[in-house]
Image 1: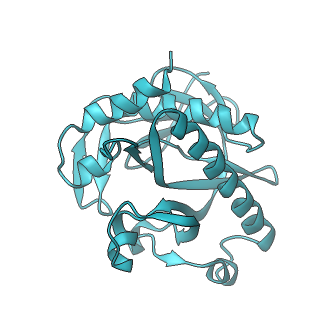
Image 2: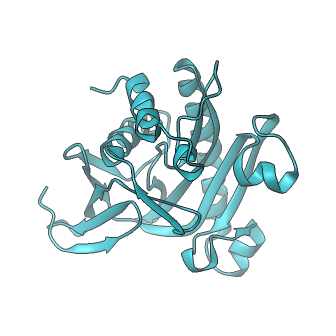
Length: 235
């Protein structure tokens, strides 16, 4: 798959056109940002870990009935994906209190919820991706009710599959963010699933194995990403 024109460059990826109008090439970068771009840095090797982990997880999700944008892994850092129209809703599922949620609710981090929480944020960097609900999404024509229902169904399925899988790796899935896109009338999972977009804690030590190590200057950032990759056993 030959990549052609640079279509878009974001905080963590570059996106290129190809000779197929339905297919793009995504190239993962080592660049890291936090706090809506106010903190910037580099996590060496992150691009390769995130690319290969996302593809590995997406294959597992497809086998469980969640359609994704994955077409073909091209190299350690590049993947051919279906050209979707991203639905401007970030979906966040939380299984434990952590991060901004714990701060907002006045809770200690690491409290296990009796059931997962589900929330939307409006995907808009200029506004800092504000929290919204389904009524906002409908009123602002961000998605249809049918799309919201499908996104909700898939998001909880993703949580079910990932919780069980990470549990087998002795990792707690604390929370995660996912995005969906429209592709020929179908809603499919897009973007990535990686230590950039998930909070992953070692079950025994509660050591953070995710981007919080970068956000909070905890050190050992590259080691954490490599540890998740090692436990996945990707060859």
